[in-house]
Image (cartoon, rainbow, N blue to C red; front, side):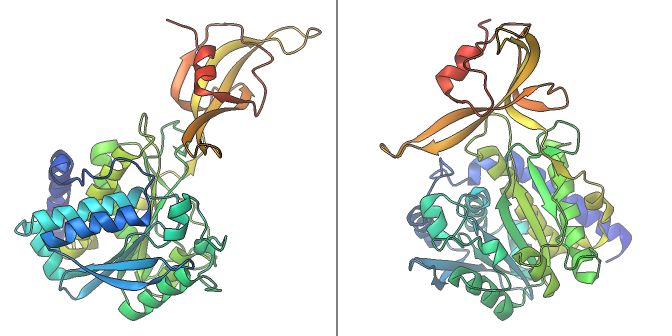
Length: 401
């Protein structure tokens, strides 16, 4: 493909991404309303989608607790692409997006992009590799192993399944789909990292070879697509070599692999906007592979992304006054508060708990909710490091307008 053809193909990929973004509600799987779901929920969605056509389902194997792990396949092309999601059970954003992608392909069989993808690619999808962890909404497997540190030992059945399917299919491209801490930022910009990308290293020297360079090109396409919608909110994930991780090893074994980490966005605790970004980005990336538009894309687009950092709080109370001791004068300080989910052991309900994480000068940090306190005095018995607060208690700290 010549230079002009590459440029035209890349423009077509970007235009397709814009179309997807604008029309997302027409193909989004509306059954999904929460990021907390079980394998049984996933199987029900697949059973409703499969009669529409466009993909097939076969058993890949079983988890440690005996849950069957499905493998989805579509396309008749010569280039194989493997996507796997939720190897960490509490990282479901891409799994939701994969359901949206299947619905698009099923609903739009005559779309030129669907036809291009089906003609050029053979796609294999593992939508939930760790169903036991998903059942508990936890990172690790039922055997308490972090599967993404089991690529060499292969102690877990789930890790063995991923290794076996890679060896059997020999995919040219792979997408390793995860969720990162939603409070990561893009470099020192204070901007939340909605998406982080990585073409994993395959050795300590972070060397390049044709396999990794192709991954960097695909990551560059993904970054260009994201900049259409969330400019300045895309970062690069830490590229240190992790010899036990699947992404690093699958890259080393010869599959051009892109890690996609779904981050945070304001007022998006359920990750529905980030899900949309995943669906748009992954479909566009698949189209770029099918049309070979990635080939001429400079790797510098990916390489110049700032690394992710942690310069964000859920809430910062700016410029409050505290007096924690009767013997010490009041001090002016910022209060950093993070809001996390916790399952009530009695009721089983998911509750939001605030934790005071830092007190002091937080001027270099951003926040999803930045509250000017204008010197308001806060109660010293409440403002303590690691103090936990209900959402109602957090709200009472904020001055009324």
